[in-house]
Image 1 (tube, rainbow, N blue to C red):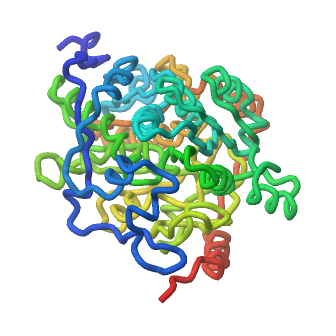
Image 2 (cartoon, rainbow, N blue to C red):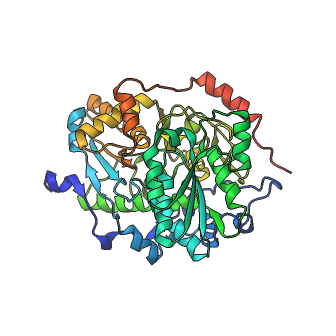
Image 3 (cartoon, rainbow, N blue to C red):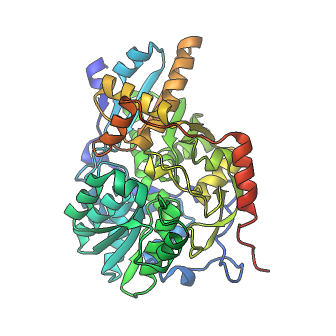
Length: 460
């Protein structure tokens, strides 16, 4: 196969997967259940009905290996799926590496990221259940944009709380959300009891995803016609994202190659899980043997330095208790530009897989991530989202190790979105004003030890 043909692999529309993959079916042990914060007992479907429609609750608790994608969702997916797989020849040349670097590009979606893979089914199932409004949080704004777009497809109102640091620093995300028909507020806000409580104590709070979740959940719980939609963390969200990995498997079959290393950025976990879980299925079945590695920010290192414990998914303590790698539900990360990765905890399912030793995790500092993003932009012609630069930083490190050792491994990375609306962040990197922040091991150890004193106790 020629270099030109091999550079870009696109599946025909008829080859697009029509099922999501549920890794719960294939794990050697199930993850710990969500617990009701009042009783300490496992959460049942009835506990989730104030926030989610029954179709999504069923998917959250499903154990079957595959779930069919509804035709209505497939119709919207076809606006951008299947997404392309690229061979990064120019990046390889720039790094002088024998490694073969591939990237699965999710920036071709209407929202410019992978988030539409789950926003579309979530909007569909809620509309099907008669819900007229969805509330949500957003960090950098990609999830809020994706949900606003999806709600527009199914006639559902969308209200978004965006982390204040990103709301102020990424005004074009707000405009894009409003263009798609959504309304948006900075978080913490005066519109909710959760927001007012934070502002009373910290008037200049930069916000966090945990705070924004509290505000969105609070509003959703007040009306039977309003539900809440989450852009990461939960099982059904990760399952929707597996269309990424399922497509990638088919694309690698077309070029007769197999990745030795699969890399994705990790904040709440959906992007990395969406790419990695189908490959993990094949690995567990003994058909392939890739290393699966998540890359997180050094300023919010939940997998690499957090504690594995039951914690709330939000700051105000409104969600069920979930066993996950956490820095504590009231942890406020440094306001880095990768707003989508500023979450105090990691997906319970991904945390469980990590505990089983089936995936690896690394942390990278902000400036090295943007250095990788600039290198990628100058070689491959795509400006990556700040979140995706964390995965690229790990790819660059691995490719350089291959250059030193002469190892010819294949690396697959999820380029989860483009950074066209994040150019001020690149400007800060290019003009030298970007700060770098990471916690020393002693600092995070002290922070986690303090957080442990505030973790919720399990009743009974």
